[in-house]
Length: 137
Length: 136
Ligand code: HEM
Image 1: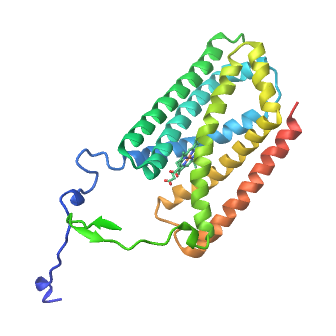
Image 2: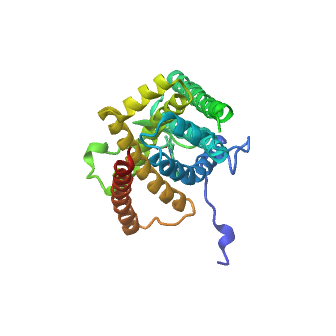
Image 3: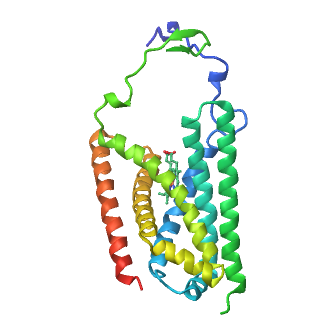
């Protein structure tokens, strides 16, 4: 141990390879964290949703509308739709980045997924809100 | 294959054998299934939104969508959705446990992979037995 001052190693890294911690924009783990947080939120939400839908199988439209319009269900459904599509968007982004290598196609498919998931989320939320604000109680 | 080392110089890299060369360990199946079920569930979001739109739409449109979901194709899609969700949730929980730096020993990995496959079958069956029992 006494001669440890003589030890040396050569680290061959480019300047780009030396980015540490969160990176220059402090955004290094952002995407990973979004995927985990939305997963944790979806765990109870999807279980609640499956159980609720089991109770609505074959039910008339009025029963479905009544279910959606109940305030607690309205909130949980909006959360389910928004968080599912956020999680799906982040997840599919990873898949595209893994398999689509041509820059142009990659950017195009990433933008298409963003647009599609945002659109679906808006449509779903507006459908829920429409039922919430028009259903006769 | 030609690649670059970390200093930017060109080096010749060895190519590893391609996928077909390997015997499939259960962990490989379990990993690719998380991706496959994730994509299936992403597609399933269309179904979810479509159902909500139907509920908010005219009686005729609701009947149309209800009819589709009760057709053999609709039932198959719902069955697939429940199976995909069961797998993805169970394996997703394992992912979250991994994130705490636990559960990476090889025997444990094989055991949890089989347990998740079994659990998926059990959960899917449970939801479907209940589903058909309460279907009006
Ligand atoms: C509507 C529901 C869901 C959809 C559409 C969905 C979709 C996806 C997709 C497309 C991916 C990317 C897969 C990949 O990179 O290979 C993914 C990853 C992931 N999902 Fe989900 N998922 C859903 C629900 C859940 C739930 C309830 C959990 C909770 C346990 C969960 C946990 C995860 C985790 C932890 C990852 C990251 C896996 C990794 O880093 O490799 N997901 N999901």
